Image (cartoon, rainbow, N blue to C red):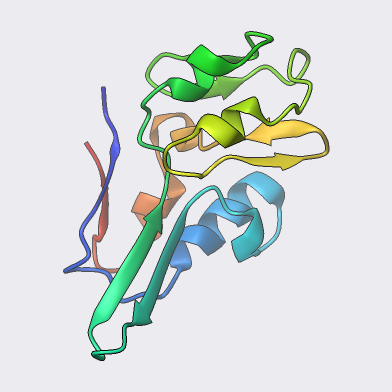
Length: 129
């Protein structure tokens, strides 16, 4: 199964990945609505650090969903008709990348196998392999 991979050595912290994600899925450029987040910052020693937040397709959300609204194959899928927005998946996610919007779970679906974040990254810091 293909998964997103991140190379901090290649990342310049531009956040184009998050902008492209939110534009594709939400119709607007909004870092808070993206399903991926790569945040760069300098620690006290002035060393560049990264907090990466994206789905690793571990499937815990699907296993823990009390309504069976989340399934995993080569991607994570949320059945919005079954999802009640209880937040169990969000609470159980080890990467803390699930958000609840309009009482529904929002999870990276890897753009059906062609992740926009990977396509737009100018330095190939994200790969899907």
